[in-house]
Amino acid sequence: MHALDWAVVAAYVAWLVWDGVKRTKLENTTESYFLANRSMPWWAVGLSVMATQLSAITLVGTTGQGYNDGLRFVQFYYGLPIAMIILCVTLVPFFYRARVYTAYEYLERRFDLKTRTFTSGLFLISRAMSCGAIAAAPAVVLSVVLGWSVTLTTLLILVPAVIYTMLGGVQAVTWTDVKTMSLTVIALIIAMVFLVMGLPSGVRVDDALTIAGGTGRLNAFDFDFTLTETYTFWSGMLGGLFLMLSYFGCDQSQVQRYLTAKSVDDGRTSLLMSAFWKIPLQVLVLIVGVFTFLFYLFNQPPLLFNPVHDARVRSSAVAAAYEGLEREFQSTFDARRQAALDIAAARRSGDVREQARATDEFSRHDVTLRGIRSQAIGLVRKATDDAAYNDVNYVFPTWITTALPIGIVGLWIAAIITAATDSIAAELNSLSTASVIDFYKRLMNPTATDAHYLLVSRLTTGLWGIFAGFVAVYASSLGSLIEVVNRFGSFFYGSILGVFMLAILTKRTTGTGAFVGLTAGMIAVASVAIGRPDISFLWHNVIGAVVVFSVGLTLSIFNKRSEDQKKLELKPF
Amino acid sequence: MPPAPDSPRNWSRTYVSVIIVEVVSLVMLWWLQSHYGA
Image 1 (cartoon, chains in turn blue, brown):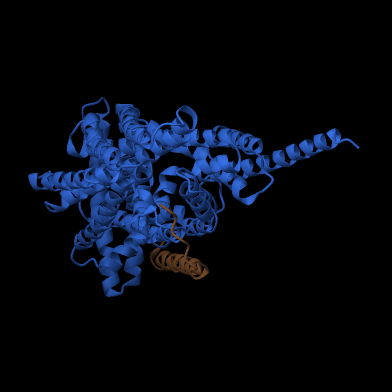
Image 2 (cartoon, rainbow over the protein chains, first blue to last red):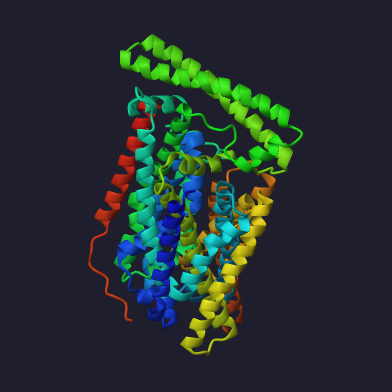
């Protein structure tokens, strides 16, 4: 990277940290530190909700998914707008009227202490691990692209987040989210402009879309009702609905965002901002990925986008096989590019038969190229023991650092780093809130002064940051662990949602019923995940919520009946 | 700080507009798939 790009990255990160730190003097009570005195404007909260969900994994991994699979992934979000409406009607007003700091605090008022402690504990475990994974995934990619060690790139992501979250609290988190969300959208639009400008002369956007569509990359609907396919219309509408209900309604990292809003109405409006904008934004990210595919359709890409693995394979025992694949890749790439140009020319001249012939040829070469890439990835796995290696995560960062002009590269690297930083900051803030409010203040030291709790909150933020750093460095050295950690969260999400459903939708449910239901839900999800690993993790959310709700409610009715029976037996006639 | 009072805003119109925006987004994606898709 050029010095000017580094200057852009350094200036932007320094600005974020300075702006966060200067809010320290505003944070003099726990309510201001955790909830900004419930005074934030709806638009800032709305952008913060979106920024917390949009991590660096979205910018790097989702563009890679767009490159590889096209728009399929957008189906994951089809349930989101409906989930937001349901939350605005149900949980949001409950949380506001209860004047809670954490979502789990509400569960003690509705059920009992053990249900609150259990769900808050589950949140702490899953979020602490995922916080490390959120740092690890971009740290690994940036270390390869920038040529730095993973520890250094992890520190580059984590240290700013820890500093401004520790000192500036939720206000620092929210206002940095606003800046980064704006930067991300600007960076995506700039990328789109450069990608369209990068099309060869004679290939119009319409031609490019026809070529991408011919490979299936513009397919945004798959109506097959199969539990084993992750991204279908039904898994998005049902599994995605339950996941979004749980993530936005029961996960402290999101609930805390809208608890900072001025009123119930502002909280609702901030959530609905995601309902309006999430699908279009996700389509933009994926379309950028699709156009990156088109860019590398006309410009020679490397066989592998990860230069470190490329070098390791070349010096391994499979080097000869790899070089053979590279020659085959080169000739097939040339043939596919020519076929793509033929499609564009045939479209211009209106020659339908020629277009059909060129399309057939293009598809044939495209399938061959996919096969060659798969074989190359197989060689990487053989030569490096990196069983989880996925080349797509390196596609977009490679395009950024090689195809964009000086200055814009810095802007994009800053966007990736701070997208990770922002998500981590929101998680550290919520981890600290749950630790202090649900455990330290509730169970260990309930009578201390507010100044004491504020100090403990800052220290807890720092400790969670150090923990996330260790998880990130450890996770990145194991590769596949990142995926395990991400899936780990799906064990809990549906079950926690089931507890909140019991709290809000039923009057009969008892604390013991909710607690046993939660345990049963988690056992059910774990059994499905282990016994039927082919079932997509999106359905785990539905299974967890349904089992918790039915077991919790049934047990409560049974318990209540036996209690009523006891009362009758004891009643003197 | 005391909670700000709720406004008497009617939310059903906003919820309907969320659904309309989603339906329009899906129709546009469907058009993209059917016009260009494989």
